[in-house]
Image (cartoon, rainbow, N blue to C red; front, side, top):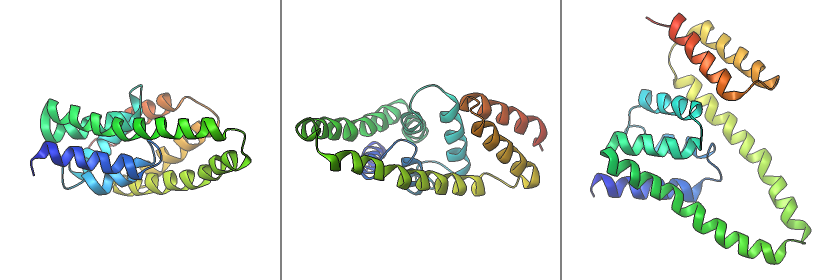
Length: 172
């Protein structure tokens, strides 16, 4: 199977099996690392897609697609990432429009939030472990970044500042 077909089926699978953009990062890690990109490239791609405006998952898909198959690879990965949610949301919207007054619908949506939160924490932990050997300084950047976001500083600002600090103080 050629690389474009592999990209299409991988991103189609990832976007069919994950519930949201950030939650798909863990699944995409297992599917893409070693097959399309290296672990270091994946960690850099996650960081870069977090800083840029727009959907992190789509930018990550385009990055991996481009790294594996050039411009056609990026476009195929983007198409495969957009296709499942678009079809699913159209179908769900038609069903929910008919069931919008049922109580179980809002309870279902509220039940998703804790599961997705735990999945995001687990994925962040795996990325932090694989991000490199930064020692106590890396832990300090992580804790300060967490506190900054806890106090509602803009996420993009926190990530850019953390990257700049890492570039200055963690340079070998």
